[in-house]
Image 1 (cartoon, rainbow, N blue to C red):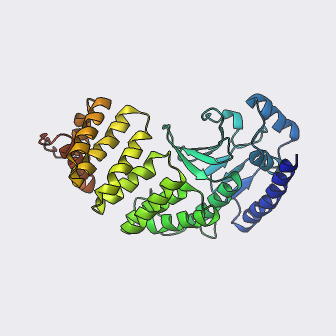
Image 2 (cartoon, rainbow, N blue to C red):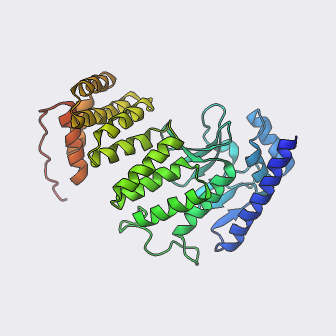
Image 3 (cartoon, rainbow, N blue to C red):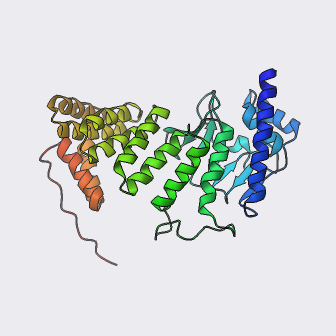
Length: 331
């Protein structure tokens, strides 16, 4: 009981801060619903078969869901007027509660320890998106508001010419702003590393990827980017174990085989013939069609990605002929 009261008191202070953000930002950037009725929360818990996590229940007692930054992230509610209904969200793994989704298809879940996890759309891999619900929400607001101007529309010069991807300098600011609010957010640390890599700051990117792996050791992708960054800096002794950790964290055999192909490449770069032979054998055992898939990747890739794909083919199956790419005939 005492712990629940302390959590409620902490939540009350937090939600004052959230209300301040709602009031401070341009109208419509954060839209919140009125508080959920106690009976609506009780019905949601009955349908779930267990109590809602206290942090999320506390949020519902203040706001029955929220739409953050034009549906960039939508937090589900439990009443009939909620923008997203909790029961309609695709479930997570046992013991986890998916409570929000992003416009890109990502889902956010609370685990048994109160941490916020992000599921990629269509994938089983998860990233640690927040050390706890309150920090995650604060960090989300801090990160997303960087993209918007005082009129509530996207600010100038935040996207690349295609309009699809945030510029790396802006992405770096977003990640650093989120980390300032929630230093335990591995997902933000990983995003920081990706932004630094795009800016050509390879040493700093490597440090960020390493930090992300320390915060979220079960996520394969910070390990993969650590290995890739280390290989680009000619440090195969760092890259090889990083790729191995990435491959071990992937359940799907074909994806694991691709990551083991990177192990082979790192072992070859390190001059470790034994490790290269072992990784090559593991990769082909997981996916007998790996080489064909890598060859197709070469044909489909362009510029630096093509060189990278060629290096993987050469590492896994030296001497494999690569078909010449046919020219594209305009219609």
